[in-house]
Image 1 (spheres, one colour):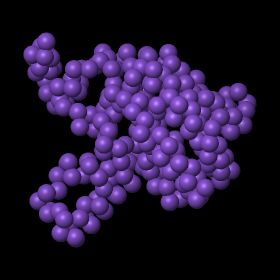
Image 2 (cartoon, one colour; image 1 turned 90 degrees about the vertical axis):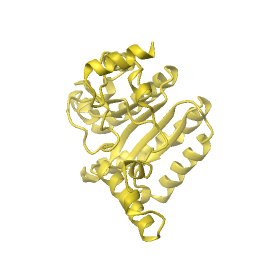
Image 3 (cartoon, one colour; image 1 turned 60 degrees about the horizontal axis):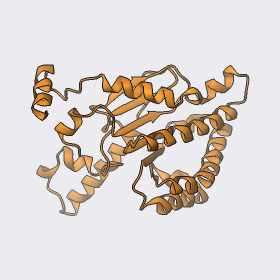
Image 4 (tube, one colour; image 1 turned 45 degrees about the vertical axis):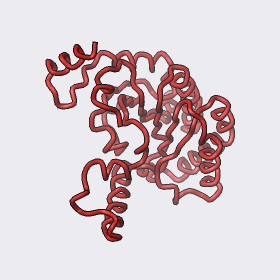
Length: 253
């Protein structure tokens, strides 16, 4: 985990988490099938990944498919799964060539065996890369994440590996997804909605939130720069007063 000093003394986020909202509306505005919006969204993902890699952002987490998205029309869900598979097939080698490590979080059991194998292949192929950590949240929900951590703790207690008195925030945190990565500094949601929609509920406790009306296919490198510039103007207090933060930063000089 980052120390308090590291969190305070930075104008650039180490970890950016994004809800990529607005693909369907982007297509509808252009009188196109929703599928065209999702395909346009994939192109934006490529641009944003390239930007974060070039800017030496440590972690980029993208909410690709939530556990609630299964409620969408079956035709759209099927399209999204096929698009997800075909994108992995074409992009894994590109990510590997650019020293990007890809990691997936969420419940994979609902996916076809073919898709699960492709996910595993991507993780294995890029495992040793030490550039940008690209995290894809797919069939993921923040409540699911906390539930799985709770089940793990309960099992450890039953096996005598953990005492109830040992259950603290750290015991929970290290059983959550992306426990080995810094928590998000900046959360971005495109599409104009202003909620976090069951995304990284534990991890976003002290994250700076940024909402934009831009639909995801319209979000570009300049949009990312604007979000990061906004982040750099904020004072992250973590429960302290502004005066305390200023004193801490002064002592670092």
